[in-house]
Length: 398
Image (tube, rainbow, N blue to C red):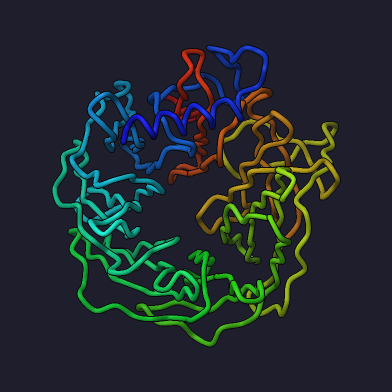
């Protein structure tokens, strides 16, 4: 199986790698770029940032097969990589969340013994010891998932799945020690691409897309239940188009939705929409900017100097927002070959910062923040050795 994974990975790199040489070192607006690992995956590493450490998780493979791994970055440097005996067939879509006692929840998708994709979880210690897992979270075919962290380190997980032709949304509770509650709530029919996001008032909102007609709905989410759903916008896909991601986020006054689409001709684009919590239907538009380097923009984060910006026709791709309610919402994105941060405030584009001129980005980047308002930007790109590097950059001093 590892042989087939490598063949697929080689084809992906051949499609994504530019014809010119991949650089072995990069200059970043945030300083040194840390290479967390070499891997054979096409998405940014899963990260969680705490005051003591940055923990990264990824999927690797060698002659013995596929494995899940993690390591920490502290003031002492990178820890040795820990491998976990969690693999069933082809793990993917990892995410990390805080659990009780300083531990972490690791969530991912993988096939079960009947070759149907399920959602699994594991509990990992700060020392990267496997404490519990793999634990099945979903009990039926699973397509996408999202999670909301409670104050005690427990999780509400919402996943889409069931019948492939008629997906629905389900919610399940995972306690702070990684144990899954037996009961499961069915939230909505004709639903896919769930995304949970917390507003400034700490209210959780769930967004999802209705595959039958492309409508996107939003509803308040509390204790595994939904309030009345509100139509928000429509994501229309033509024949051959593919929806690659859908992510919700908030600043102090507005909610946002970002999605990435690969068109039938292979072109990719990012789109977005925003509105106040009590707004009606939102107007979706393509995500683009026009920056003004003569004026600076105060981001509110420890991110160095940013330029003022507004919406424009310098089109962005691979857009992923920060998943936290903040005064100014940062969004990681690709502009040509550059890896950039776009800052939004009050439902408008307000600032822009180029982090890397040549990122050679594969898949989507990932963006995180710590309590001291330092941002952490992670991505994956081809390495000079023909593999791929999982990379991280931040202005937080070591």
